[in-house]
Length: 404
Image (tube, rainbow, N blue to C red):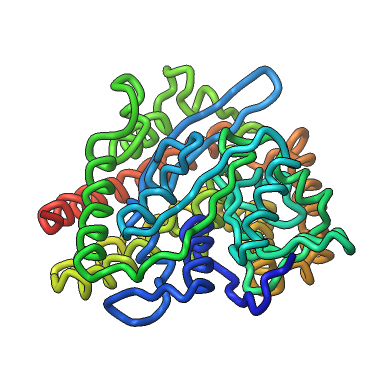
């Protein structure tokens, strides 16, 4: 069961990219261009960028989570992807299974009808680089029972073929969306009026979450513009138990926080910089859809934000520390190799992973910053986070005025 003629691969962000590829395969075009939908437009229609800040800690494990797209409820119903499709008048049929065998059965049912499936997986279970600390979606367009191969489209520009055992392993663990699949029923082409309404609603959702946060009141400060303020405050607070001077002492925990934050900012999508480049592209396209040239000006503000996010990620692992500079370079190289070469880069990626593991192990006994140098690093990071907050506060304020 392999869909003949499937040829749509790659994506700038996993969820928008998966939908883009499926819609292109089905021959769906955007009404304002007559061409397949772009990742950027779909991303923005779903709500676009966001911001979240959390630290998860246990006796044996600590991780820093930095959300870079809008936060949505992801249960049986796929919140982010559902927003994109519903707003465009496209029918997305989501299904939940209890195990990997159930998922394969649903995938094959869709394939027998000539439909690719969108699937949520655990990025850590993939045999190639997945989304760091985030949801990961991909497209399944073939299952070969004779060879045992599963044919995938993902963020790589190349076709990906993995074994059925690897396919099953990628569905174990991870976040609640596991064992969830979705198919797109053949839709009628979205109308211009529906597209305009979808673009406006996506912008409104982005502005609302960035200004008001997400979820219960006691958690809202962890999201949106407030999350940037919270992060900046914790970077310089020596008294708070989760303040960086107290919680992230020089050593492996601090190294993990710095590399994790860098990875999430730069390697969740093409272009890095917390997906701000992707959102700026959406706003430029939205300006044409809505015939509001002022949106191009806001896109320019987000390109400034993109630049500042890039400076923040660079400062997390400063070039003045050789081992930090190397780790930073290797993490980006790992992503770009996969994007360009797909599974043909597996050997190079394994070598990178081995070297990154060596560097992590070295942090247990040879961390390159003293306590004073770490404090200086935190101070510099705080100023960069606050500069992002200032630019995005103004950008969101301007964007909200244009979304009416």
